Amino acid sequence: MSKIISAIKGSGKQMDDKTIAMDMLTASKSSMMALVIALSHAGTPEVRHLLKRQLDDAISFQQKVYDYMLGEGWYNPYDVDDQLRQDLRQSEEVMKSI
Image: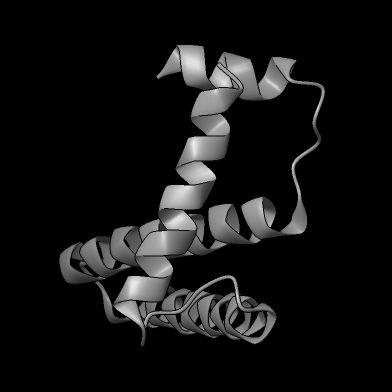
């Protein structure tokens, strides 16, 4: 994996908006999962309330990134074949740069 990351970093190409948005979407999903776990372990109503507010904010942020990507045509969860073609094309571009 580090070879792929090194190739991307060393390729002289800057990350594009699509890559940044996808990273943000992935990170937002991970943070939501972590908040849900933390919420399920919270011991006091105050902590639960705080974590719930953070989770609501994370969900709102994830929705904004999702809507942006959908509007740009970068993410198509309703057409699996199209999304797979996009993902395959992007992975082939990365592999060519290695």
